[in-house]
Length: 297
Length: 243
Image (cartoon, rainbow over all chains, first blue to last red; front, side, top):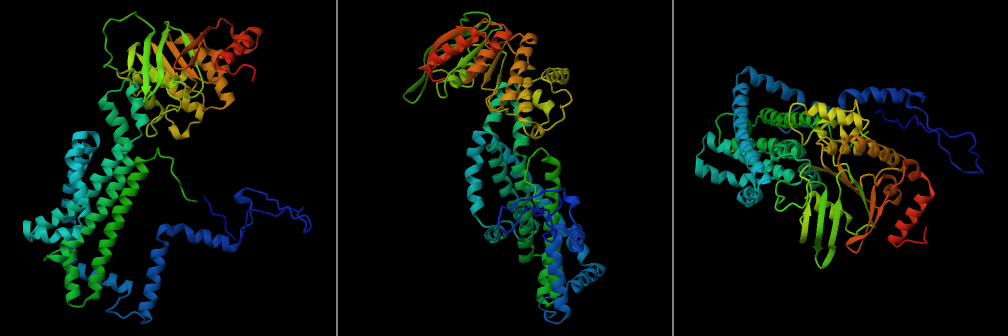
């Protein structure tokens, strides 16, 4: 869809519109036929490459300019280019690579554990009444406990090793997955389930052809929350106690007033979140092609 | 559905409903209702909204159980609902084969889709279909299992007048190919006259009156006999003199 630039309206006033008889008329012509102003052409060219990244890029540019002009001091907020430079330096020193690897490993393990438990419990809870009685109350209670508040308890229980970190991440990932999957399965249109039963399809067909695809949108919402919360869990786990990982990098930077290094950690965390979101978006485009959804023009 | 009790069957074919009662709260929607449908007969159930037509149809479908009396229907039966109820996440062909098993399921589904005039649309998503096309897919889904009884719950009520007339032609054509008893619930008198072998009018939770329709296709369109039948149906519905 192309946007109608305000400078070149597709609506032309008819010649019959005289001042005395103020009966306004509208004429619609094909979008290509309208006159193209230089401003409109420029807008179209500018729109294309940035997309949803328009605002982040604008903020980065402003930040860079303010930092170079000396408005933002280096210890307060170093320029984006110097953050990138710090990242490159850290990588070349052989610090960033291992730290990133260990963080990704923690996030991956935690996600795998949390998602398996969340999906299994969600499917059982969604499909079976007994599953609902078994899991629902428990997860609803867990859901009200903030992730960060569990951390001290986990350290007492599981020590300060990797186990605590992985469990915290899996806790963050598992709970939203269960809640969304449960709601999605229970929310599948009752009329479609009734229809499926009347066609003589068995329980297996009902599950594979109706309940699973019908709960897929809710599952993807759950996945998005899970990925986001697992990054949150990663941050929380790593800043409290670690001698490796991104969190350690940040804590170290904070201790020695290396604001650059703090920002490098933050940028990587945010990139992880962005990647996770793009991953789910790609999944949605493939898996939810059937959905007649709203597309903003 | 397998939960239908198979004790003392009255007959081999068709539908037998005996003194069926269905209550919602204090209100008896179906009150000692009797109904038989012969093999390969198309019976129209006519009545205003809320008279219990759909309740009766749901009892015949096995989607609901009676509070009294007994319902005997063939195990092989299919329903066409008022809304198409297609699975939006499946293309047309898997929507038709939903209840079908075996290696020739796809071939049979293609045949039936061709019968309803949708050959070549097997790969369309339901969101790409018009209302009439979607309802034809749901008709194909019902017929593909070769049922002995087809229950149609106001299947064309949501369609425009021109599409509805086309669907009537389609139903007539399909009846020559598929040997099945049909019960069509409607509130449209013209639809009843256009399609039915027998038209039943529901009143106070029972079958109020029954009219056999012995008219040729041309006479169903326009004839003196048609107008007389229409007048009698209007009278039975309590609308005499208003139209």
